[in-house]
Length: 178
Image: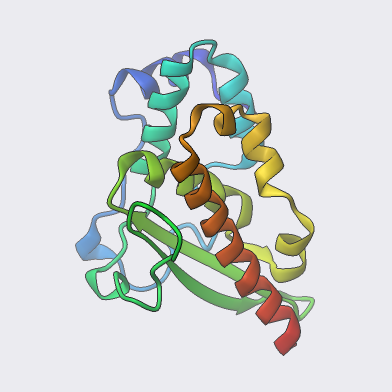
């Protein structure tokens, strides 16, 4: 469900709409129980509401600001995503749902504001989902649907693909281990 127009306008105007968790208060567990701050349907609706690419760009930047802080310890080589021009880290957490399936939860960070926003979109699609759900979804088509692919440089597009491939590889490994 899309947000009300007034909330979207506040979001892209730079006025905060929601509060972020403080890095010092993070205890290793998601405050949102593995769910992204926003969901793909809300993102799709918000993008449909925004006519101008600059407004969409600001919205992507704001999505990046909603990511939970990643600890300094999580900014390590094991979490680093290869193939991105910017530095990107994905921290993986696993749990098991009531059906016994592995659920993957992600937190991420980047040194680029735009990439943080793109990462937030990827996490909205993937974090808190079972490994099988991740493998059956097509994030690249979602990015195309939003029009992002047409507005990203080839290097940024390669970085998005690298993030998605990393998440899908984690999901494939979880399915294989089950």
